[in-house]
Each structure stands twice: as structure tokens, then as C-alpha cells.
Image (cartoon, rainbow, N blue to C red):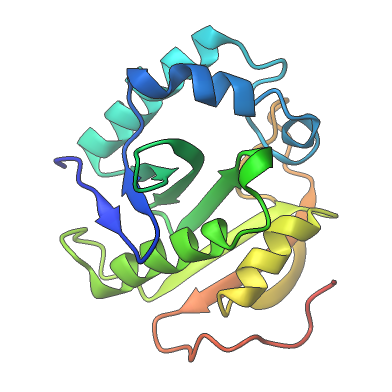
Length: 186
């Protein structure tokens, strides 16, 4: 599939490029990434090159996954968000950009696109979310976006070592009203 951009009130979502390498490497040094994400650790420049050239480009081409850099209107990279056509979404935000609602805005924008089937060919009825137990920041964003907490179950996305430990799971359905739902472990 041809890569494309999405826009929201404050953000520009566009596929990451080689121009983003330094920012990606810098953001991925965050100790929270080691604890809560499946990115390589320690994260090196070669990992970012592989991510952009192989993972992002290859999965866009096959239609398997759509990954966007979360950007300020200036184009500065703030974070990353991606939706896999098997149904799940993931995101991260650079440390200095957290707490401003950017991740929530990007998540809402991507979910709106998924449900509108704006050229994705997916016809998705649900977006799944998962995170490591204890990742309160990710859970707060999903909750604020209207996701329903569905409980603890093994991760779908494998950890660095290939294991599938238990994690928190949630879902957002196309016809959900996007209000905050009770029952989250926050």
C-alpha cells in the first residue's frame, strides 16, 4: 500500500524517514522503553535504520502494518504510533512531549481512520490494545480514548525473548461511544 499521512487538530502523522533516525534513537534510550516496550535494548542506530527501512517500509508495502511518526506541525518527531491489520495498535511518546495529550490525539486519529476504512481495506470493527502490566501511562491513554479494559491475558506481541507474558488488554469497537469506561486497573 502507498504510504500516506493523517492529520488532527494539532498533529501531523506521517511515516518515519531517515530524517527521524537521531530522534528515534534518542527517544528509545528511555528506561521505560526497556521496561514496557518490545523495542530492542539497548537501542542502537542500526535498530532505527532497520525499523525505518525494513519494518515500516516493508509492512506498509504488504499492508500488514501502518506506522506513523507523531509530529508537531513543524514536522518535529514527538513519538510513534502503529496499527497492525491483525487488529492491534501500539504507541510511544518521547519523554519531553508526554502529558500534553498528543498520544491521545494520535490514537483517536488513527482509530477514526481504521473505523472509517479510509483506504485501508480492512473493514475493522475493533481495535485491540495491550501493554505490560503496570504501564499506567499507556493504560490512561487507551482509557481516555474510550477503550474498554478486557483483562489480563498473554501478550499477542512477543517480548524481546519471544515469550508471551501476561499483560493488560483492551478494545475499542467501531460503534463504541468513546466515553471513559469503568473497570481499568488505574
